Amino acid sequence: MIPLRPLQTGEIVEGSIRTMRLHWRSVVGISLTVAVATQTVATVIERLWPRGTKELDALSGETPQTPKELVDVIGNGLGSLGVAWLLSLIGSITAAALLTVIVSRAVLGRPVTAREAWRSARPQLARMAGLLVLVPMLLVGVLAVGIVWGLLAAAAGAEQAGMSLMALGGLASMVVATWLWIRYSLAAPALMLEKQSVLGAMRRSAKLVQGAWWRVFGIQLMSVMITLLVGLMAQAVVIVFDVLIHGYGEQSAADATDWASLISIGIAAVISATVTLPVTAGMTALLYMDQRIRRESLDIELARAAGE
Image (tube, helix red, strand yellow):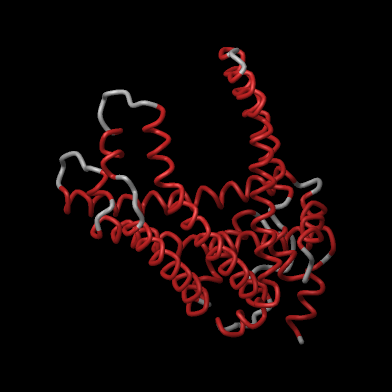
């Protein structure tokens, strides 16, 4: 799947796409199953959960609304958003674990079925869940610490100073959060392939990223851009469907949550996830292997294992 030597950026992207193309039954089967399962439940919840569409329609007008009305509208959506986030997290954990196993076997020229990938990944799923909860919580905590001082100053009456503190603190916390994101971005493949604990995988990732932060950042940023590009293309499909269904007039919140609109949004989300999950998981796994090749001569071990 990849040359057994330090990889160029293009070879990491190409290797990820080649894995999806040559092992498409397992790869697409996993990503499609996860995407359909999570999006189906999310679509049903979005349609049936009380959303307060009248309040949402009111907010779309030009008349300013009171803070209480805004809080009520936000509160109506928090429940369904929380469930949708949980479903997305479960899907991401499952897909990342299974796809990492498939990529690692593909590097050795050994195809693996979805059932075999599940059997290999299942013991690690609990720790993978812990990792994919802990790291986002760490990043959110950093962002919260950055803006809380501005909020406190604004609450004390110094609104101008509070806004300035929020801007500066937000910018500083974004820089720190980005640094931490890259520092721990290789923790998932380390956990899956080395059977590490959650904290052990984070330490392992930090060690592999050390001295190569900017390179890892560039490749991970490319992965994010691929995801955004595919998402925008899928969103264009949704817009076409909405125009066909509702016409060119203004769309109310009730129209945005009818079955036709939600199904079209769900289809676009499934298409986007089916394509992007294998590519991003593959790029992260190959980047992890590349860092080990550069630091630990993993290519020698891979060559030996591939010949067995």
